[in-house]
Image 1 (cartoon, rainbow, N blue to C red):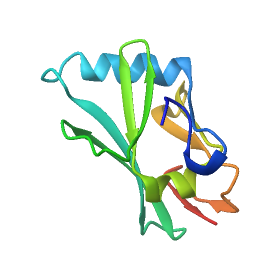
Image 2: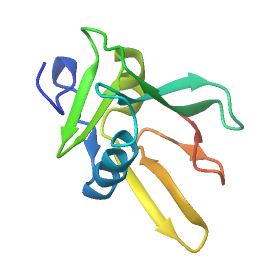
Image 3: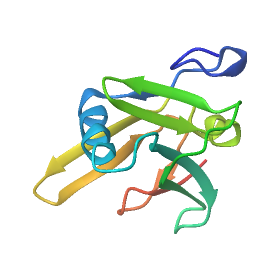
Image 4: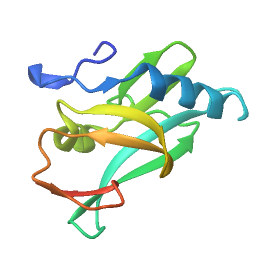
Length: 117
């Protein structure tokens, strides 16, 4: 599977330039080979929540998003819930955070990390 391509022709998951820049900044302070894993798990106030982990292990079936010096991994189960999403990094008056714009989410919460489908 090539970068930014999900299995069976599903919609791609995109890493914005702002998110790639922030991921690269974070990874530059970690040991070589460290990447960001984004996953979806049950929980949060809306049923599902996004999880962000720094890891050094990769699975053969991970989706690999690479842009500049940033590498993001997404497992196949999470890909199903995130197809068509955009991973962004936003800095505004409320603070800085990664935000996932997910077209499959029918509702979300104010914290921006929890959603329902």
